[in-house]
Length: 440
Picture 1 (cartoon, rainbow, N blue to C red):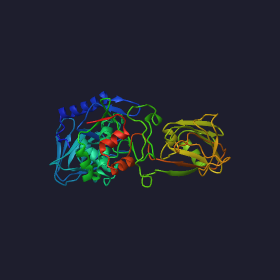
Picture 2: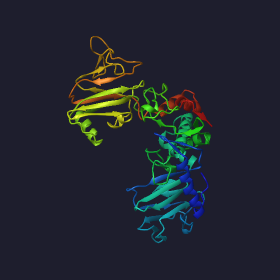
Picture 3: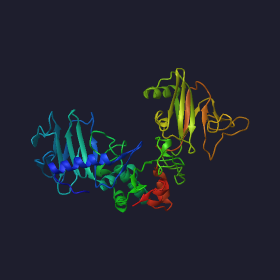
Picture 4: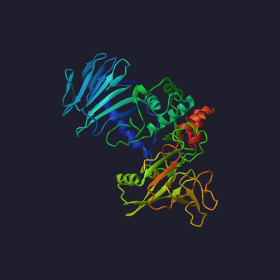
């Protein structure tokens, strides 16, 4: 953890300049950013936006110094274990009977003697920054050492009981990801939030001796592609093969290519295979929630499918028109676990062709997934259906059978576990999932 210092005028200006500089030098791409180099401290937005509230409670076993973040003036020195109930007023902050920070819209709370700071019952390393924004919102940021942040994230993103080499691979992913996250929360001034929108961060509570070991044994290790630190994406389960990034988020990146993923344990991996059933009315409601109204759903066609079996274009046909979606929207619009799925109209059959080629052989696929016309079986390539078109109009419900959990780009966490259990080291795991990266 980086050494905590009082945030006087020069320190605050330096921090704000550093945040701005980081945003300025970042190269924003369609799916993320590249980072210039390693940073020793990360700012995590714990509360922000309209639902951030107007108060918080703090304490620390080592005591807390409360500073005016604009000029470094000490506002209050809380003793060991003393609780501070900090409220936001119309112009600043105050803790009744402790200090009156009216007119002071920015304060920092710094624990003393190397202790944690407890914010609303949850302990954090580093220190806390509070700001009353001009629109009346409360902004609460935890400034924490990068390695401490990664150790906490690791405990949320992967079980600490998993093999250490898998944990080390995940640690490098988390470190690269946060350094490349960029200005995705525009206007708030922090690096990442604490939710799945960025990476799940739980403070001290989600650390474990194994997560700290994984971080320590990969200390300073970053993955680079063409000499640049790049975002390493990860997800739970691929279902047998990962996906090239352009088939999920649209833009190709040389290090994010589809790779075979044979080490996932099909019996244990989350959603390695899955099946959901949606009624016609449920699908219509999901479309309406996405701002799409096609009237009564008549049929669903999956128009484009990748070699890994992921749907990259599908069309909903209704009584009032049609609507097509592409790439990751194919899964998110219906709330599916992955893009790797087959849509079956219940009570009917689906017509299967190869890659949309009208001159290709045609087969039938029943709702149970079994071929059944003229003795033929459903066309496949390595068990992967190439294109599936629902032919039955007006089916009352649809069975959707799929595999994998998450976007499918980058490292499969269950695959990393399987590789580690089979003797692969963390660097071998990373080089398998991320094409042509350099580690160091």
